[in-house]
Every structure is written in C-alpha cells, then in structure tokens.
Length: 85
Length: 248
Figure 1 (tube, helix red, strand yellow):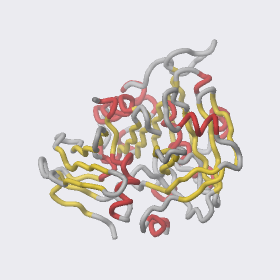
Figure 2: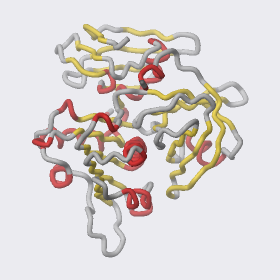
Figure 3: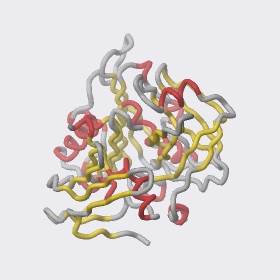
C-alpha cells in the first residue's frame, strides 16, 4: 500500500484539466480533523480510481474517476477549498 | 509573473526531440523543443502522452530537469524495465521525433530564488531531477542562497548529474552523497541509507528555519519526512514529492 501512495503533485495535471487553475497550492480543509494544507501535500492512492486522503488523519477527502470523456469527483471529505484566482 | 502562465486549461502540444544524453546506464536526459513554451519554475513537471497505432494512450508525469531557457525543456527519465512509456522515451525516440506533452504543471513543489533559504534538498535516486532544476535555476540566476543537497544513490555509477553537481558546488552549495549498495575504493562519504542522524549532520538546524524539498520513491520520502519532524523541523517547511513504481 505504502509503495503506491503518491501525493497531490501527481494529479496536478488532472486537477488543472478540471479546474483550469493550478490546484496544488490551493488550501483544503479536512472535513474529518479540520487540518488545513496544500492540495499538493495530500496523500494520493491510484487504483481503478484515485483516492485523496488527509495526510494528518487519513480521512478520505475525495475520489476521482476518469474515463475518455468525463471526470467524476466525489468531494465527500473536504470542508473547504481555498483557490487563488 | 509566472502565475499568469499557469492559468487556463492545459492543452496537449507537440514537442520535438532535440537531443538525448545518457546520464547513467538506466537514465537518459531528453531535450525537447516546445514551440510557445511559456517558461516554467523549478520543481514543475510535464505530463507526457503516447498514442499507439490502435489508439491506446498512456500518460505519465516527468519532472523538468532544466532551468527555464526559451522553448527548450529537458526531462531526465529512468528506464523502467516493465514500463509502458519510459523504454520508448529512453530507447526508441530519435532527434526529430515528436511526442505530446502538456505543462508546466504544479505549484506546490516549486522553488524560486525569490523564496530564499536556507535550502535543504534531499533526493533518492531519480528524485534528484526536480531538485536539479532548482540547483540549475539558482546557478543560472547567480543566486547564492545557502543550499545543501543530500543525494542517495545505489552506487557511484547510478549518480545522475555527478560531474555537473561537482562543478556547481561552492557559492553556497554543498553536496553530500550517500551510496547505499556499493561504494568505490576510498569512499569517504555516507555508505548507508539516509537516516535521521545523517539528516541532522547535513541539514541546517531547526533554528535556521530551512526549507526542505524531498523527492524520491515513496518509502524514501516517508522516512525522510518522519526523520525531519523528529529532528524538530516545522512540518510546513517540508515539501515532498513521492513517485510510485510508474511515476517520474
């Protein structure tokens, strides 16, 4: 499991594709423990989909599934997202 | 300002291979010309996309190795034996051939001379690549931010950019190597994996408030980050970039 763990940097391209802004410097607040930190530092697990976990409490922040024509995102564990515009 | 170039949707564009240089038996630097390249910041990466004749596509991220210079972008790629993308990039691609890439990508694992230091860079294997972009950017800007690099490789033959690192040392840059598996005769530097004791010896003290950038395979980066926190460094000053078995 640990071998497959990456961080938010690894999905920077995918996130920028969706949000059209650089997202790794966006600050997310975990809905589980309330810790706030840059998206680039969250833990990322890649399998059939992508799972983002809080680096402090391991809470699932979001899940992303992508196919050729669309991206599906579940933001279940993110309380707030602060994005520079 | 560089930030404005990051806005907007990422688009795939064609990049033409200008030259390829062998760095070690398993690692090559491939230099592309990317028309309209907006420039990049040290630590950023690109996504590379290969399309097979049957339409099958494979996408990977690679750190940019070069300091920003016009439309040239250098990637340093380690050949993974069972890889889908890296063997093509290191063995098949010839000057004049084109691939698709998009970028520059990322803003978190990034350093610019204006951010200052002291800088402590910790690299495991090909994790040196984005850190080398920082060292090259620093040198190109004539910046003398106090910078230390602790670089772990298996053997001396696996050290990427060995001569250039030696050449760039001085002017506030010091380089410490750790060779984990084999050492040449007379080796006087570290001969073990990076650990807390080594990090304490090489990095500036917590009182100097260094900025850390650690890049390498996931277990390497985990061990480094845990050690740094144990040594009393501020977690917010530790930026990490992990790559898995198919990553950069």
